[in-house]
Image (tube, rainbow, N blue to C red; front, side):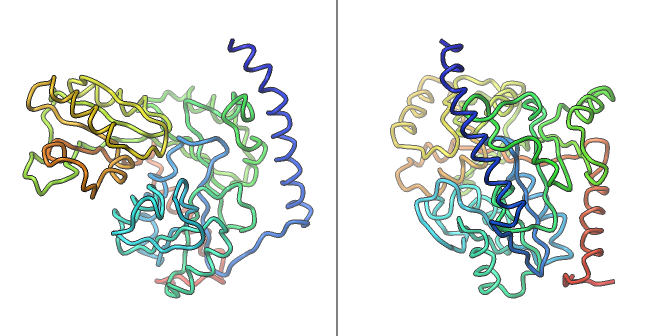
Length: 360
């Protein structure tokens, strides 16, 4: 059955790859135009579908750059129910702006966060609304070539390398691996904590980057679960061994679930598709699972899932009291965070047209 599916998918993958090739050539030949802007534009993207850690790395960029720049974030707002340009607020519904922009806005309320599927229009309107902004991070826009960023940062999941993948729908590639040549920085994400020198060399050799490109390796560090509704007075931290039920709606939940299982008594899991909007039947199913567990059992979700569960009036007080979420922090391997930041600052110094908050 799997072989039959691959045979049927092969022509579609060939057709999809052909369309992608033609589109890139139209940009390369100047038939389709890329727009440059007079402030730094940083694009964070990938060439596979989902699950490389774009949002945590976008948050990392905010933390690294906000002391020197007035940073803003522009996303298309994937899976939102609205169209056009919208500025996110801390009270915006995830249905209006998307779960990831909402997550970023909640974590950095002073940073302008906007959504717009047309990135050129989005940049123009964002600057009109916030003329003080002098650096914009484009979330998931590597394929959106109508904007010419001053630096492209492309992410690749260590466990799903692009050089072993195939085009959609045969594989997970939504772009040609050759397009990595447009990136100034390639970040291999979700790496194991302990990597041997040989592991670095294998990845580097297979990627075969150009001399002008920099390669970094990062891992995702799960933070201790925190109560989603702290007003109910539940403990701020969970002791190891606490019985938990997991509800997760992200692209690759394996590592999240493995992390819970390593520290807590994982009783049951509810896995949904990425960006899933939880329904009351899902909450009721979790409540039923809780009823058969010890009274100290809690429900743990990811930070992105938490955005889709917070402020819901339909969730019972008892369920809110037992609801925790896990956030993610990006950590550079080989102690190279300072190199990464220094390289970004170097790009800024080399582009004299950009206005920096604290010029030398």
